[in-house]
Length: 75
Image 1 (tube, one colour):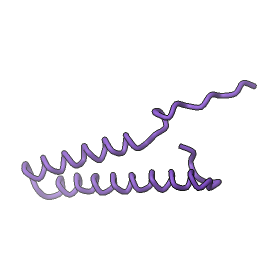
Image 2 (cartoon, helix red, strand yellow; image 1 turned 30 degrees about the vertical axis):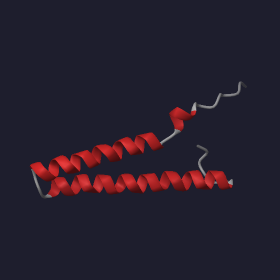
Image 3 (cartoon, helix red, strand yellow; image 1 turned 45 degrees about the horizontal axis):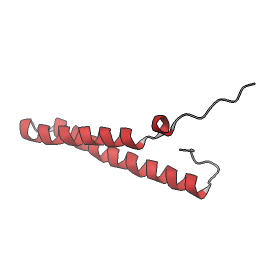
Image 4 (cartoon, one colour; image 1 turned 180 degrees about the vertical axis):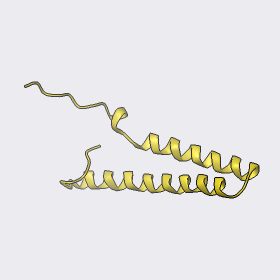
């Protein structure tokens, strides 16, 4: 059986994806704040908050991997 090579770090790193997604939600929040009100602004703001939660989870996983935790995702 052949050894499967590791994927390059740029394909497994989630940080850029989360940052881009959070930035897009932040942009949508600003635009919608001036265009409309109500549920759309709240939805966009929720996307920003969830993006920051995602960044915290990515950081938590990296810290666990550096500690050598057996259950940590290897990034």
